[in-house]
Image 1 (cartoon, protein in one colour):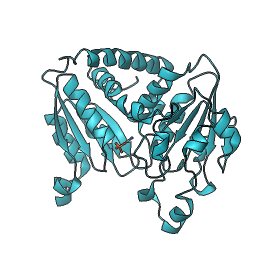
Image 2: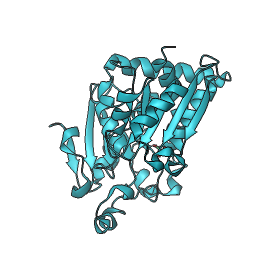
Image 3: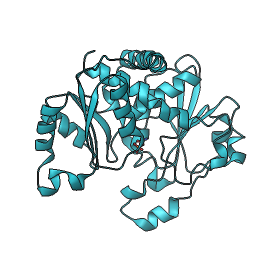
Length: 301
Ligand code: CP
């Protein structure tokens, strides 16, 4: 990687991706054997200024499984930022306490700002509607476990809120490194993928056509990001645009995967959870070995 921080998927080369996938696989073996102590004496600072279950807790679990410890600030109302402290100062201070910082912010670009002021590596755990690069790596890891990405043709269809869905923005950049990956974007016009993530070969749909359901190898569904809409009428119009039920998912290829970064609201019915295509809970579990790999990487271990 070209810097110690992990801020955007744009920073990864193909060899970075191959190395991280391999290291995450090694970490999965280590987890099965009960963990390791390579981070003994190291501390992760978890600064989460937006709600999170998976990202924060899998980062914390990863550090514990590596033998390190965790300090965290998980509610901005208990942070000195409510007394007027600027984020730059918070980062300088926490960077003096911890060896690595995982941060989630409401504002696009704030993880990069934090990295600028941090004396220790910063891992972007989601910056507003910007990016979520560590999620993209666990998504890649999950895809690589079930599909021959880069070796065979792979049709990946992104469905849902593609405008505000930061996990989509980060995963698209990662997938561009792999030969044979065809990308479809399925969303109502008002929440379609921003131009900056689009290439000429991508396909755009506004509805969930049969072609998408029956021909995709991976469907990457996302939640409508209610908290990021300025116009609630617009949210009401699109909130139920796509709902995956058992009838739809059973029409997918038998060996296809339906992924979702979670949390889901109503876009995947619970009846889908037991179908073989449903990989989203396994995907969330993969957050631990992937984040173990990333913590070890940025600490140079
Ligand atoms: N996938 C993800 O970012 O989930 P959380 O918001 O629960 O961290």
